[in-house]
Image 1 (tube, rainbow, N blue to C red):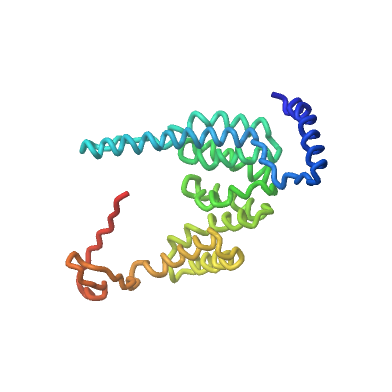
Image 2 (tube, rainbow, N blue to C red):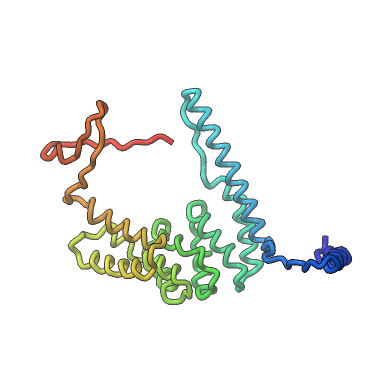
Length: 266
């Protein structure tokens, strides 16, 4: 139904209610908040989320059934529910090419195609860097930039990340781009190397400027992981209970070979 027709039909009813309230001495209270209109992207994303949830629920049910029957767990392709939606998100990006309306479609493609179709994810990221780098709509891209080197050639990733560092108007995007460029050095370089010291200083500065957000916590976690658990470092003194309920500490076994077995159940 055309919303203009709906508004025209509603006008007499609204007027009648207003007059009735006025006659009773009451003042009609204007609406303080209106429902956000659903965009084409919102509708498509909601459809994808529903498909993904249905696929996940089906997979979990199949795994549970296999466990109960003591049979091997079935294997699932996590990209299966993504592939049918890729052409539709590409179409949305092409339909709105060059405008901010294309940005959420492109971000979806970067987020969901890195594993299913890396070349398409790279094309979407190139488009964001070349045509939309200054857009305020890039906020949702930030965290994804931190893992670009997981699926993109390091040199290509550095070139793209540098564009976002230099051109984005969104602080979070610039921060994650910097994190993405320096993460491999932070996680792999020798702790006593100049490269590690530079990466640590650069990312610690981000930590201070971005406060207690997700990026700041990630920086702190990565630095803590390297400097507390690197080869040659003294392990933290773990405290726990043995099977007999007797408390023990890791330091009780100093000088002995210790095998730690971490496990969980979900």
